[in-house]
Structure formats: structure tokens, C-alpha cells
Length: 245
Length: 190
Image: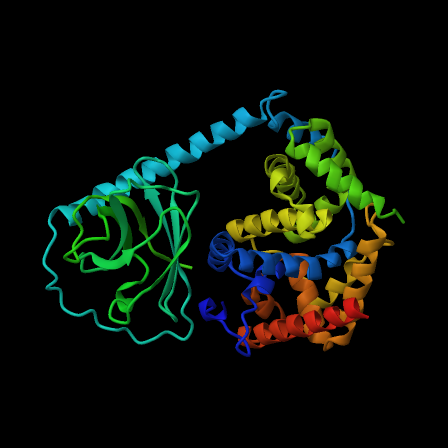
């Protein structure tokens, strides 16, 4: 587990404690939250740290909130008996928002896929390793709006996790294949993944330098077992851009 | 001081909230909003922001109460404080408003006159054990941990505040966290 942590301390991963304490910056928090979603053990570690540290809240002075706050909350609950409807509406909003992002991302990436080039790109030059390599996070959105897949990549270890928001089954005759599209625009296969569960992928040393901010991750539905020739044969179903965490 | 039945009451209320019981949410609000508002206010240092976040906190409780699983052992107040702190910290990071510089020693100054009305015996014990263990740390390690907790600031902000390199602050906090855990394990075993 600690192998995924970019900031080891005495070889120990304390990022669960750091998240619970609240010292991480915005991107680090996002990365920790992605891990909580992907790794139940990490999520439990965060809870254990919350149990340890949050009794400190006993020392925080209790302050009665102004009287107008509760009516605002109450109004926000929606009409009586509408809790389920409210949740459904929220999901619809998330879906539409996700779709808009996916549509534009897919439009851009489809161009790359339509003109699939043979793998003649020059080898990617390895940049000098920065002192601390932050995790990279990508949210792969889906044109069908069925939900997205979060990918977190640790440049230090080459380990990439994919986590679907919910089980996203694909037709039995198809295998979802994950592609890395670095700056040169050529999709490189990272292998077949499982879109119904969290999956761990080890990115080969040769491909690691291309896995950086702005690189695109895409998932296509290939023939069973994955693309036979290392090239995608379908338009991507899920697409997202990697961003430094 | 209130009794442990408060914890059971809060657990039961959250269970009812998960089932869509608005009165139960009202009860959770009455029992916990002063503490959670205090937590938000301490982090955000701005009443309007804190009120706004507090609304979001209870709307989140309304929607996510089903995700609270008391059988896993997490205390309900910890679960609620986690929501309040996370929402406040996310807001703080998003606005990145420079806050008034406050000497780090002030962190110890926030102690309430007594235990919060909703604090159970168990919670007070946990707070006492934590205070003892913080007391065993090097003072500057304990101070940075307290400030980080109360104000929800990043390593970078802490480092800038006390004029110490970020790497040093990180090592203080990480070492402090490790020792705190060991100490608390001993406390529990004792």
C-alpha cells in the first residue's frame, strides 16, 4: 500500500493520517479521495485516523449557528417524501454535466483514433525525475452517461488504479482495453481492465514517461481478450485527461 | 456531562435520517450544530462562509446518512465532524483567501470552558487520552498538529506561518502522528 504513496516517511504511508488531519493541498486531497474510493483498506485507515484525531474537536468552542440556518436547510430537503426524487434529479444533473465534458473530450480524441497510425513515434524522452512526483488523476467520462471511471497513477511506482463509480458492465463479447495517449498522439495499450471493479495496472517502464499531465486515457471496447495487434479498433467509450494531483 | 446514551441516540437518529425522517435530521441538527458550526467557523474564520458550509453539511448528512455504518465502530460525532471538516477544508482550498496571520501558539487557546453538551463519557475519555498523548510529543510537533487540526491549513501554509521549511514541518507532523498512534494504542491497551 505504501508503494502508492509519493511521500513515504520512514517507509511508512501516512497519507491517510495527513488527509484526516487536513494538511494536504487540494490536488493531494483529490488523490487521497480517489484512493479512498478505490481502496477500502485505505478508506478504513482514514477512518481510524479520524477516530484518533477528531476528539480534538471537543476543544473547539461550540457556537450556536444563527436561527436562519435551519430553515434554509429544511427548505433544501425538498418536499416531504421527495428524498428519492431529489437524489434522482441530482444524478441527472451529474449525468448531464458528465456527458457534456465527455462529448467534447471524445470529439477531440476520436480524431486521433480515426487516423490510427502505426507505432512509429520516436521513443519518448525521459524527463529528469522531479524531486517529488505527485499522483496523476483522470476522470474518464462516458458518452452514454452511465458513470465514470477514476484513474489514479503513481509515477514513482508505475501503478495505475482504475475505479468505476459503479459497476459498468460491457457486452460479453467485448473486452474493455485501456489506452494511454501521450503527447505524440499514438494510443499505447495498457491492457484489458475490468469496468465492473477496481483494477490495478502496472504501466511498463517504457510507457511511464508518457503518462503525465495532459496525457489522455481512453477505454475502447475491443474484441474478447483485447486488441490483437496493439491498436484500438473502436472509438473510445470512456475518455479523460490526466492532471497532476 | 451527558451520558453514553447520547451516542446511541445520535446513531438512532442518523438511522432514521437515512430512512428519510426529517424530524430526525432536525434532532441531529439540534444536538450537533453548535459543535459543527464551531468547527467550520474555526477553519473558515468567516461567519457567512461557515453558515453556508454548515447548510451543505446537513444536506450531506440528509443524503448520505445511509453511508454511516455504526457497526463498523465509527462514532457518529466523528462521522459528522469529518463531514464538517472536509466541507470546510474544501471551501478553504477553493477560495484560498489569505487569512489573518495568527500566532501558532493560539492553537491551544481554543479550548471550550467544559466538555461540549453533546460530548459523551466515551468521547470525553477519548479527548483526555488524546490530550495526554499530545502532551507527550515534542511541544512544537504537538502545536503544529493542533493548528493543522483546528485551522485545516496545508503544510505549505503552516510552514509559511512559522517560518520553517515545509520539509521540516512535514517531518514534525508525520513523526508526531506516528508517536500519537503508538501512544493511543498504549492508552487503549492500558
